[in-house]
Length: 325
Image 1 (cartoon, rainbow, N blue to C red):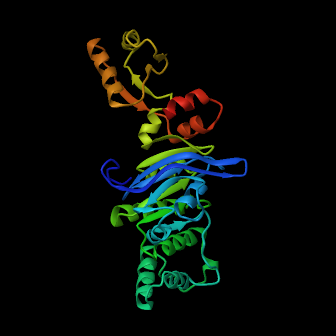
Image 2: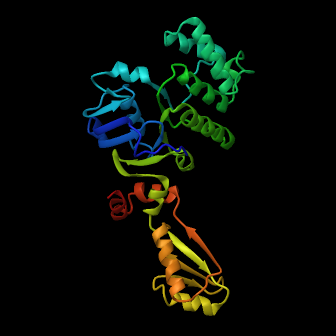
Image 3: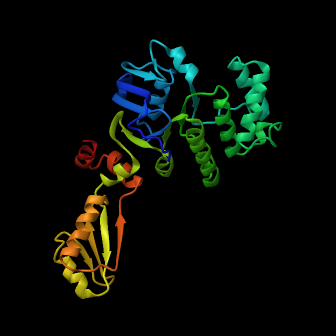
């Protein structure tokens, strides 16, 4: 993940009360967003949650029914041309012309950006090198693998040198190796070039690997937001697992942890906890006070799969409500 502090960087994207409906169907129900410059912000949610609609609104492709937003310092409705000049958008499916070569696709984008011919060729050559497409630059895109097309699609987005990039499920359909290559490229855009990334994805590992902050969108509402670690700690099921050298030590420790689960075969004690430093310190202090020595200690926290299922499963509304507070 990037090292930019979300608390000190100015906002690249801010939104307040965004709403969008199609007939009787509410797609976005008053969402608020704040994305600092030079960070990766991931929007998670199941199909139909409103992720793509959010990207379409913030990139000026459609208008909200209510609410306001600023992107790159420009008001979304008053200065849409300023927003468009500062952003790039990569959709769910590679928007490349399969009849052209990779180089021709990039030069076409340069023409659409009204770049001088020499500058367009310079940027195209640089992007082909950055995305390791130089050898395939003059071959038809129809012969490219899915990963190569995705890289070319992102390269085309960068022709205009955007400050903010919207990536709407950018690794859909890619194999694990191609997906990790895309992750490295995305990280480089942020750490080396200071670009702000607004990412929507259904791959929870992707958000975990890339995002500085994550928001979970469900049925048009934001139900939780925070870092990956913050979200994981808010899901029930975290615990500290203590292993002892013999049954006597295990029993001695168990007397001091009323809600802990014992495993006599494994000589372990499972103490409920959120995995945070205060919880860990409390367990260690209790062991010290009791003069009990644990042979080993491991901290177990829920993963983003657990977060996602808890918040969007709809079977446990009370738990989801608690997490959203």
